[in-house]
Image (cartoon, rainbow, N blue to C red; front, side, top):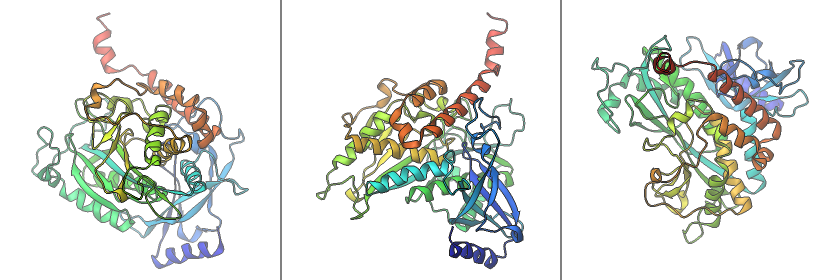
Length: 448
């Protein structure tokens, strides 16, 4: 970090009369880790320190059997990104939140940091003279507060003092039931510079979707990371939970994080997916071919938990294969109707439970491999992809096995990161597998 950059951060903190600084990094689960530091002790040029092992924690706070950080449990440096400096709008005292980058003491990036992984993929695009543009769509449920995890979740009570009856897809009045919370969410997002586009009611009961404006991938990953944090906080303050589980309720649709992607040529600024005459380019088809070829191996990034695979079932508005089609929502890969300048590919595979940095990195990596290897896609599908066979791993352990044997993805992401991520997912699967479910006790205890 240059002295000028550090000084600019100091000035911003002084201008906003900041009393505390939340120093954040996204961990493997996409959760905020870090430290809260009094303003008078925060020095941007120095950053701060955090144990490197934080980056190999499972979602339960455990660790894989194998160590992927040095056995001495050393620190890493956290250095602030001046582009990721924002206020905390719900704090009582003026508080800043700054997303930091994880680096070693020699200045090298820490390979296990998800933000660094995305930067690594973006550097590959830059080397090819390309600039990706993405736009995420974020689905989530509002539910009643229920501290007992053995009790199924229920939709919350709205302003009419009733819960929703049935599914209210695209209903304006159903969204208005929760006007108070969304007014706060929009105000808080505006205060943080999070660029929200549209809000809709999704298919599920009290299931919502918020779309973000398209932009540069690292900035959008940061916005998704902060948006989840914002929505959870707003929900709790209004007496409910916001959940980003992929499949939180039985009999309800799952929640996705659809990702729209296009590629610009850096020299011209032109959409690389379109020819000068407006027709689809070879790069467009190669990008889809790469997604179809490598997404099955990258599945642990898009469906990172046992629960994630409950969402990916036939006839539930979630993909079961990687068919692609024009404006076909049954497909895992959809090409929306758009002008040649806005031609893009929507990847519908990811659940909203996934880490946004890794979702964006993995989707762009698969597309990049397709363009570099000139892979051809299948023919576009005009019918229902739900009538086509399953093409994706059905369970987390199967998905991890595929990832571990995919050399091209390991080369792009870094072998050390891929092995560490796979070990973390294996540890989570083993911990889950040790739990006996209510279904098993109900139907197997006395009947087998």
